[in-house]
Image (cartoon, rainbow over all chains, first blue to last red; front, side, top):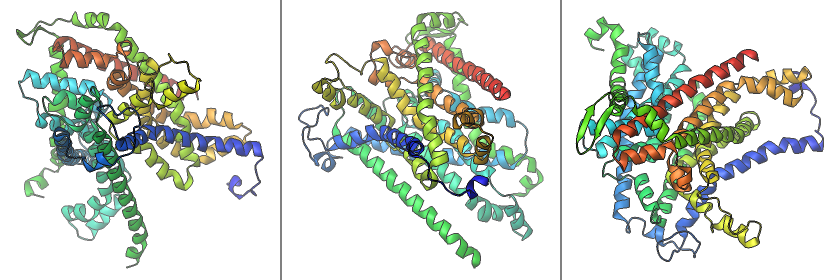
Length: 282
Length: 286
């Protein structure tokens, strides 16, 4: 406390320079993180002659205009990725939330093995997860297609959902539920009106994480895809002969959509926060 | 709630566990067991496989791919240390100096994930290219000699993997640092510890759980990675992931590939265990 009440002295120049090092450094790391994304976005406007998008040859909006016209297989791959991501997110979020609830709200036997079962898929390299699934699918003669990709994505997403949801429920005040029950609500009503709304932000965060992990997954998908092509697989295949600028445009577009989504989410949370006191007054 | 469930309340948690738990058993545990059994089989796709309990496959695989195994371990360690060195000061800045920009800075750390992993890696290939805009320009000015290259060298592969897993390092470090009570650090300063001493004796030990989580989150995916070695490296940077991928998907040598997968997984589990013991010992001495 002494430090906060002491009069503020102006630090000597040398020390102030020292204080600036960390923020400046952090700025540089952020730049490093965004450099490849910037390059991707810029080269989506490159007016390429021929197949290679390696050197800057002039500005064009042609690739934005012809985004979905040039490569039907690319469109299909994007559609496959979205399908897998949506289904695996819905299923994994449901299954993972249930496990998260069980782990935090109930006493039961077998907690230790269950925690291990949740932790191991996260601690296993993706290539081992993918390779194991491939070995199993081949052994039982299960043809690999979009179904096996979805099965694999649900598997690796469950653990991430459990971990995310559990963190949210752990900081949850049980007295609120007791209060609802005291006021005559039955268990289902209490869950619907109290528990679920309170843990919903955690579930939403888990779902977003699952969606992001699924749509970007390359390794496990490569092992479980068979002949099916997802967006990352298509880009990988194209990288051997030269990635067309349409991929840069799609990457930029996905990035922008995510950005807008996050912006909306932040705005929504701000409004909820500022709306909270008024609803309490009423 | 139906009445039969009301009578057997103890069953409720198990009902919650069934769908997810069964899914993990069917598509994680059983595949791992399958890999173990495939490793012990002999044969080929054409002639079929027979379980021969060929345990000799493990020493054979290690002897045959020792270069790639060692290289993966080495790259994994270098990447982890590098990512920690780059990520710790950043996490520290966000946690202690972030102020009202904290959430925005954290968002900036995870935002690269909105662009596909593979697109970012291809982007790096392009940035580091021999005549790309970085090296090309440096060569034109004459700062770098014309023969110098980054692509197809260990430097490019290690830099690529470090880049990919840096956010995984910053986030857990931030979580651990954020939890530290600033008054503990002030107390150290009041007791005449220099800023450096206060960091070494107070901040660093208190953030050790974050260091542990962060190093696992970079080491595990780094050791198993094969995309960076494939896109940014040459034949001299082949990692164990590349070998496993090729054996499974190109050569269809399932027993050998399964044996290597198991070796990789066991190797990682053992290193994680040892590492935890080492860090715990360190915690006790502080």
